[in-house]
Image 1 (cartoon, one colour):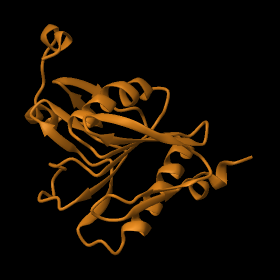
Image 2 (tube, rainbow, N blue to C red):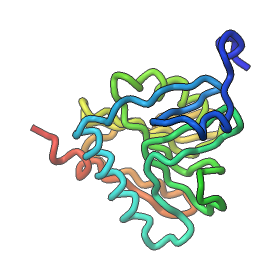
Image 3 (tube, rainbow, N blue to C red):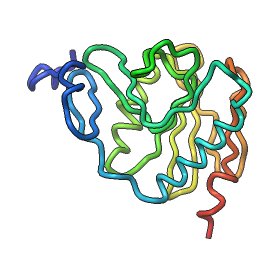
Image 4 (cartoon, rainbow, N blue to C red):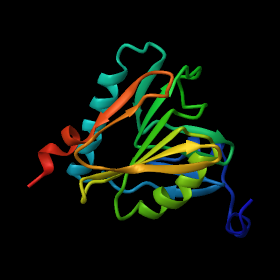
Length: 182
């Protein structure tokens, strides 16, 4: 357990289930989710959801889910912005590592998404982690190779194909960001 978790009260999934509002639990530490995201954040999320849904619609085993609880263990429950899950046996929450996790970065969540969740997703062997920066109209894609995430690049006008997954998936970032270019 990290030193910080030893210094304060450690919460569990049973505590988490009883809380009102939107929370995440990382190593027993509760993190309040930011208030409703900005309209741009939500619209970009919608575009990414649409791209993933369209590209995986023939795959009957996979689903695109939004802000779904992922219970990693009794003291860590995350709520990724967008996840591509396959063959999930549980309907209440995600139990297995998603194939793709997308986090849309805001000032209030940047450190958590870029540092803490980055490490958790790597440890949990999420094959692809996508960080989306609405203000820059850019996405950074990381692919798990061995035990490390390798940056695949920065994407703004390009399409990325996640061709090595159980279900073919892709995101056309030009289409996702199109309405926000000035």
